[in-house]
Length: 219
Image (cartoon, rainbow, N blue to C red; front, side, top):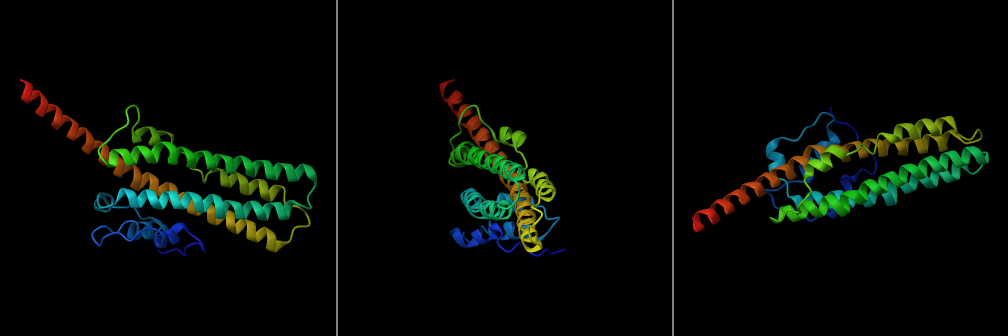
């Protein structure tokens, strides 16, 4: 069952990432299937062939895209639509949206300042002590969940004189963002985390091998 992709899905970042060798088709095939097929789940072979730098480049680009384009567009629409509503409702709408936006910013900053540097280090055979991808997995929140609350708040506090076109436009953008963020979380959970777990396993195996060699030399 193939679904129509949102008009401005992060799949556009295929064009912004250096094309990988033929033997490594991520992110082109895996990302496309993730967005196009509802029940798609990447196979182990696809995960194993993933280039970690390509995946991180996609995730970083998508963070900027969500914050600077998609979320900003909704916020601009909200300001225009709520301008004529009473002050109390206007404050509720804007406060709730700001809280959500700050939650997304904190989520992305944690990934870019803590998780991604750790992944890059272990990708080149270095491992920071005191951190593993399991910490990220256990605390990984779905940033699309709160959008359901946001939709309900919007519907409850619609300005009475707002047009049907304005309501439809802002709801469409929220639904579209919600779906894209759900796919974003899916890619991190089903591709990024298993890939890093494999890197960690390889790192531990290499540590044991080197340790065994050192002990045999000194025995």
